[in-house]
Structure formats: structure tokens, C-alpha cells
Image (tube, rainbow, N blue to C red; front, side, top):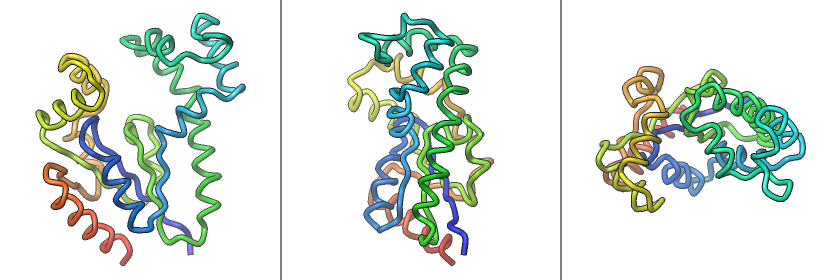
Amino acid sequence: MRTRIIGLTGGIGSGKSTIAGFYESLGVPVYIADDEAKKILYTPEATKDMVIAFGESILTKGVPDKAKIASVVFNDNEKLEMLNEIIHPKVRQHFIDWVTTKKDEPIVIKEAAILFESGSYKDCDKIILVTAPKETRISRVMKRDKVSREQVLERMAAQWDDDKKAALSDYIIVNEELEKAKAEAVKILKKIKK
């Protein structure tokens, strides 16, 4: 029996990481793509590729500097695309390798903020979208990241909107009240496992 891949995504501040953690607490293996992408950023191979693409100015003491990289790619879609072309294939390969270590599991979850934007949703058997009202999301991110409303709105603008994501999703969890969201997550898991 093949391990089924369930994509879990949601816009910034939707609470997708909370839902991912909840699924993990229920014993479902969860791959956090954003965490792995951050680790891959510092590998010698990725560093070399980024220096070729953006120059040595993105390094601090020979190591990629996230703030410097962000300042180069932020508001420049072409450079952001170049960064994604360096990082996404490496994350994808890492995920494929990770799934092979979980071959006895009926399902695994791939949690990714940009599951649709990166195209990796195509590798998933089913997709769960986590949503929350816009104002709820804004206040969550402002509180969590200690950033301004404008900064949150800029980040939101860089992601697909929920309507576009919902059209490609199999299940939707509205994460306004956590207990209700968890109950919905359990219901969805039961449907998927059938």
C-alpha cells in the first residue's frame, strides 16, 4: 500500500502550524516544508547557487544571511523566482526522501505555506486548507512576529488568496475557534483514512 500524501496549507496567520502540530499529536507524521527550506538555505550547495545568483553580498561571514536575502528578493518577483528555483527542488527531493522513511504509514502530511504557489500541491493526494478571517490573521501575525499591520498585509499580498486556494483544496478548516478547528481536523482525518 502506497503512503498517501496530504497537503496542509493556509495563508499567514491562519493557524496551519497549530493544526499541523495537532495532527502530529494524533500520531500522523508531519513534514514542515518551511522549516526544511530554512535548513536547506544553509547547505553548501544552496549557498553556492545563491552566491552565483545574487552575489556575495547575501553572505555574512561566509554564511547566507536571511535578512540580506530577503532585502534582495523582497518586491522583486524575478529574484524571488530565482531563489525559489534554487530552494524548492531541494526541499522537494528532501521530502521525497523523507516519505520513503515513512513507507509503513498510511498517510503523511506535508505542511507548506506556499503549497500552491510552489506547485508542490500536484504531489498531494488530498489537500486541507486552513483559513481564518482576515482581521484575525492580521492580529495573530502582528502579535506573533511583533510587526506592523502594513508588514502583515505585504506578506499576505505575496501569497494566493483563500478563494484561489479553496478552489484547489479538498477540505477546509476554519480556524477561528481552536476547539472547533480541532474537531473539524479529526473529522477530515477520518474521511481521509477511509
